[in-house]
Image 1 (cartoon, rainbow, N blue to C red):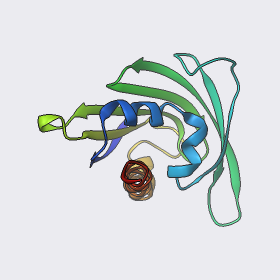
Image 2 (image 1 turned 120 degrees about the horizontal axis):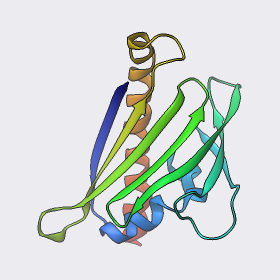
Image 3 (image 1 turned 30 degrees about the vertical axis):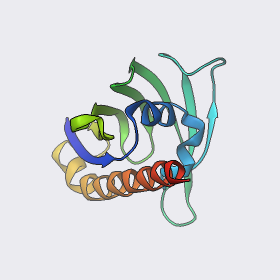
Length: 152
């Protein structure tokens, strides 16, 4: 099992970040490879909510990934698990912490990769650079979306 982590500081209240993060239909606004999201369960987003993302993989190639929300601990922890193209079984965990003196919050994303697509350590060597880059880019996009909205 391997872990990939990225983090950023947002100049936005933690509750605003929490609400944005849990509105999974907005994922295409800040997750670069996500084109569309559809909820497969009815009602508000809670533990056991299932959603499907249409993902851009490489150039014109697309695939779908299905996720189940497994942990929601407002406003500190959001976790979902799924079986997605390229990486297979994965867990994505978002941890939010208030910043010092209440000025915004820290957002950390951890991607837990279970060995299996190729062979353990090889998985991480092949996948880590791209996933790390994608998470950093996604956090930058989240920052732009939320901080721009706040400044208007």
